[in-house]
Image 1 (cartoon, rainbow, N blue to C red):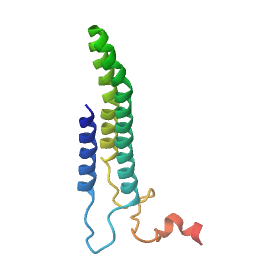
Image 2: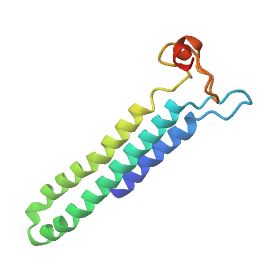
Image 3: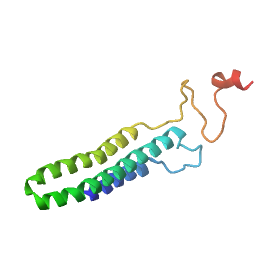
Image 4: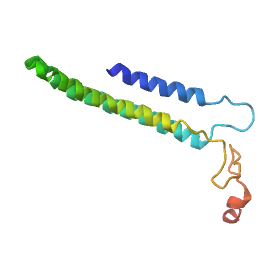
Length: 130
């Protein structure tokens, strides 16, 4: 079951890598929103996978020992391990939701932000900057 968690992380990594456009000589197209979304998706999938693996280890060892003593506990142990695996699936689903939107360099006021510099539309921050 632990191999499935690695496959979840591989899926997220391939999606993140595929959504990054190569530089085209113009302004960078990889905005901070996209970068933070990729970071959050990786952390969600990675930390949920880590916790699912930890729960599998904590529950699996006593579960195997209990099944060795009483075979009727097999189904209960498998159910608990399936719920532990659901943590990893939750991380994959949240990561996929985070990766759905991509920043196109538009500020919250609707104007296009020029990437690679601090110059924003004067209507947004013109009064605040002087």
